[in-house]
Length: 473
Image (cartoon, rainbow, N blue to C red):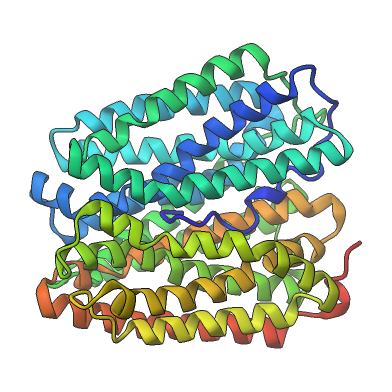
């Protein structure tokens, strides 16, 4: 997601990938960390550059939304398909292809003379990330065994969290010291190192079952999300134009066809609907969509607010968000252990409600006041609530389905997290089009909507999660 906090279930999708230990484990681990850092860094680094890009290329609010969503849209739609492609055609091949395409797209973004080419580059980046992310995890799952597999996935997840956390700070430094274009060029050394290590040390692996890819499902999901996103972007703008309702209707129709197709394909679908047979998985899906949607909106709005209304430099705006990933990283281990002892239902109820309180406090945010009194308090409250939810959500998702469906379930949940950020960003047009006091007021209103979404997320956990189904299997 375009944020500094990775989706909760990214780290779990390698859990049941068969394979054998590799001869050069450290090189394989480093290759996957460098590759996934492309996605984690690029998902957050762009947010602090939005005001500068807007001024440089003459972008309006809708353009700024699409700088973020052009990346999230293909990532959300193709994430499951990217993992399936690795299973069928070879994970190493898809992994290296994703890295190479991401690097080329980064060059296009850095050199883009217009918004159209910048957005095109972001689309390619998102599609490339949908290839490299699931296959980097699958490579870890097939290259390590037993306890070493768990440690490698934990190291990968920790490195991703660090990369996402420092992304806004790196972006701010580059924007202030060089240019917004430099935030895309920083991807090249990461991609170069990942390609060299991957080509030399990563073993190939694939599933024995070479089932046909669900290309039609992927196309329908993409068309549905694209129509819905474009329609919401148009309708949320300061002066909505015609076509928005039609686009939303067509998007919903395409998503409806996608669900019908997935139902017919059964276990061969990219998102088997059998996963939603229990109220627990439904509740966890609702929670993920709403909670990560609210968080995705925050990571777009807060840097923009601090730069435009608070007159922060880009690097200060990036640093202002650091308490969120730091708090989540520090507290997640403890919360994961607590959820194991008492079950995930209450942590996943209380956590989102605390996040809601943070957004309610953010409705009174004053970017012109001292950071310590005007900005930090709501961010800390949101961070505490998210820290209470991230690890329990991962555990609950893994335990909500049969062991053979863990990878698919977590992949679908990760795609939902990105979709939440995608839709939230599409609704921010009227906010991003404002300036000064009007921007502060609009961010306050948006914060109340985010608080409401988090309340619903907490209630979904309270009412739908079944403790007996969420015990470790």
